[in-house]
Length: 309
Image: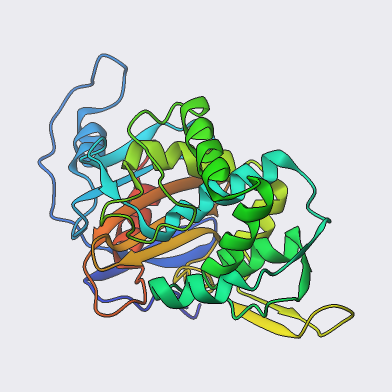
């Protein structure tokens, strides 16, 4: 049978079959095999393999969990606070989703151009005066990480920026995210470098909450979105910045993030063989602004290879 290589990330890889799909796994150092069982009945050999963790993960803060239960399978600095860049936009989306009105139409404000220019923000290229539905604006925000779309949504759903950010922090408290705080709606480093911060543990909770909404799941899984020109708006095409989509089997989202102060960040979810995993890596190394999927890939390959995942 022909072996199909799905993953193109660097590293020392070996084959792993999950539900009939061959993916590549990062080779890990051999663990010491011990005889006997743990108090829970799990063999000590399996426990050692599970506790050893993925090899080659560079992010100083990272975690991977069972998406259904939230159980953490492996983590590093689980509760250490760090800036999260555009992963912030997941909370922006969640506040909008909880407020409703996905088919409502919003007008892109003229002030969005000055905002994007002032902060050098990532943009979906929205044109002032165009009228888009809230659902379309979610795609514009999540796929190309459009701060212009986030700005438009925050202005409308606050109403006003301050009121919207207050809703973001209230939602974080409601979700049990005690080490998270937002000062803006898009993750840009203002008014200070660590303006929006969170932890790996809190972001797992945020990702699970957002992915419980079918509308968000659909948006975060889109590799691209094309909106034809129509009454009240120009044509737009947006591409998803998530490096796992189309490269890792079963990838379903969630959101990238990058600033010079946060490094490469990725909140992700993948489903294979009836198992769904959710994970996050913060401040992963990488060149330029394009977030890579190396750390996420190594965590996923390790987790899917565990006997008790």
